[in-house]
Length: 454
Image (cartoon, rainbow, N blue to C red; front, side, top):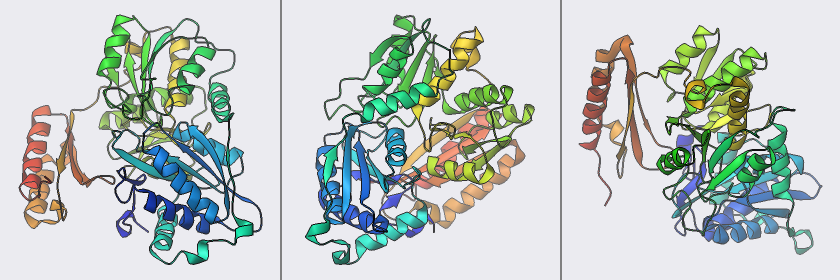
């Protein structure tokens, strides 16, 4: 089933404004009941792991979900603020039936979201999410168990330590970060304790940023979507590298010693080349999305490797990786999936793989992390209300005309966001002027048919 057949679930779980449907306590309660019913199979004690980031609304959604799961007969293990990949890891290691992460990732504090993981630590498929949504829309009376079968809730105090050790184990044995000064920006989010701890325990001199969450400041001028301040601090402190995570620490952006930003495509190229040289890269390919730069594709091809593209969303990257037998994939935005170490995007572990190259490379990050020259690429977001303007015939004709004009010199990608009412317009080609003209013209055509929300 496709995402278009669902109303609640988008490309990365359910997301919306906190305390408004679907991100309200009532919906969270029903989700807990429905997901509990869906995964309540067999006679064993059923268990769900629930983690969250640092948003104030997590205190509302967490107990609502907990009540729903307990009512459906599932024991609840609460682990508090931890990165999304830690929840996937704990779901597997605790042999839980389900994992839940309460987070809206890189969004501001006003938003929140709920991501679900199956017992294998993988994000649920479209079909599973559709089935849960159907249960939520029906009569959930049958999901509620008798009093004797109600679940229990408990808090797991050593959960952060488990993830810290798992992250450290991903770093090459015998290698140390002792000679590196690292600025790490945790976005006042889920990794505000664990990320600086991992880097410090591996020997680095750590300069922490974004580690004072107050419920309202997550992603506010910090983190992977706002790396400008990190770049300033890297230059001020003469650090070797800067690491920027987002609110739930499943994505990564780097800043080199000169303060220049290194995106997910360059990180993918660096890790792929490093692993390929060590004969650790499986499948002969790297998986990325349609947003990744053509420069990455050319770089991999020159090394005898392929680039397999998927729809946007790290869940789809993970699915394609499993199909193709690959162990490395990711997104330009910074989600990095490395199945040798986990089942979902992990910004901290991806950073450790880059740091391993930096330690052994003998060159600064500005040289090591610039693997290829990206083709000019521009992305513009057009917000709309009501029906998608992409359905309008005039817009479709304009897109077709520019695709014909661009031909084989580049590509156009226009898609609706899976998490908000936005049309993303992207063009890429060798000629930067042509890219800008294409994006501006198409964005204007879409705006002319879009009802702009108040």
